[in-house]
Length: 104
Image (cartoon, rainbow, N blue to C red; front, side):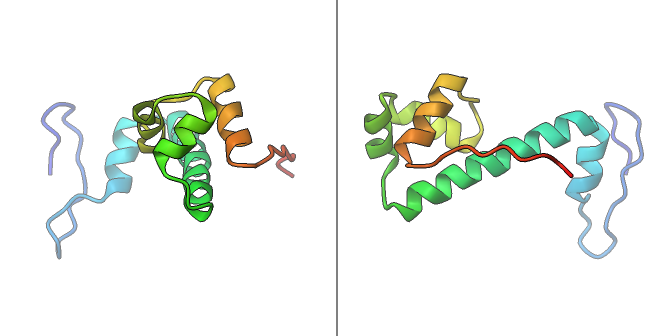
């Protein structure tokens, strides 16, 4: 399959007829962007899992930390990246702590 916008060849899975996400991702997103997106997805995923573990709705958490439910929804879907102060409020609101460890 040829991507008409770029003229690049993408591998099509012969069984399904679909292009694999990894191939598309590698074609359109730099390695640096991939790492950043993966880290962000892991952090947000952890926050969502914690919220659900505590059986707190988006509305309840948003009220607890002083943002709108709509803003929290955008953060959880990855449509918005929270500012550091909002991230800190999320951490406190979910009774979490941040621990940084070296990549040994």
